[in-house]
Length: 329
Image (cartoon, rainbow, N blue to C red; front, side, top):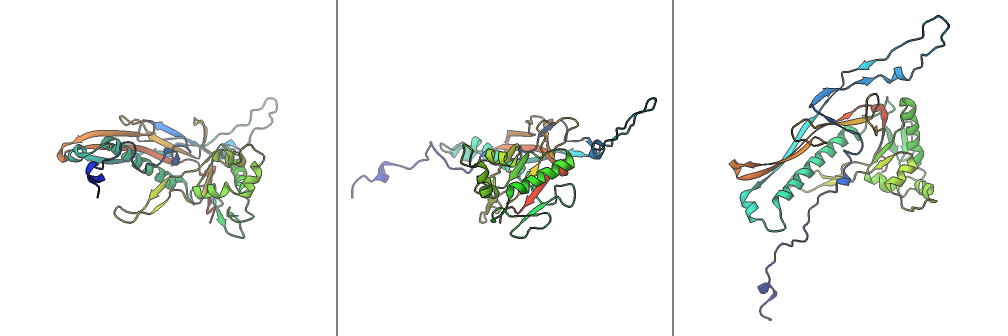
């Protein structure tokens, strides 16, 4: 046996060029991309809504000489409110662990990334529960559309993985219906990753783009096919298994689609399906009601990296959205 051995002349150390951490790409998250972010100075306040029925009714009449003009008015509701819930999470870095850490481990950097990821996950999960589900959207009992494997009835459609399905017409019918009810044409589609994977290989979609220069169906190209400004595909993943138990990974967004109108320029007297009210008035908060702090916890001989995020993801106009459930099997 050759002496010395490889183990005698080399002691394994941590590589400084790479490390492996499953930090999700920020582009996987869409909670700050769908509805406008409204910075607010107070944790709670009111906002004004106008009854659309008054604005869509024409009561102007022909005026005879020497008579008064026709007149009317409109209803204003100032009771709706928002409340920016404060979410927080921390990671403690104790002195012995910090002192014993080798390169490339950076406890402050890693702790900050971990805290940030936790808050982003929380915001995404809250957004999904507030907006991406049945029984939330629509102006009446016909709000939700549901995919079925065969024989669709009222408020149903043929699932997009089934031969003979017509996704473009299915979505387009609800775009027209929403525009007729509200005067606003939906401009955003949020579709779960499994739905996007099916649609980008769907014969109806491929047939409509076959004469374009791009042969690969992207979210941008799909937006053109559906006649909306954006198609957003949230690839965010969550582990629903408790710590110490077997991990259970799944997409946060299921096999469904949300079609909605999001106001690109929020202002007075304009609607939007939803808004995110972010509490920027809390000292140090950023544009999304967020802040990261690091401070000493002498009682446990640790530095604490703590993150906060204060917001209310508010459903504003349910009639400006349509939810398509079970789009694929």
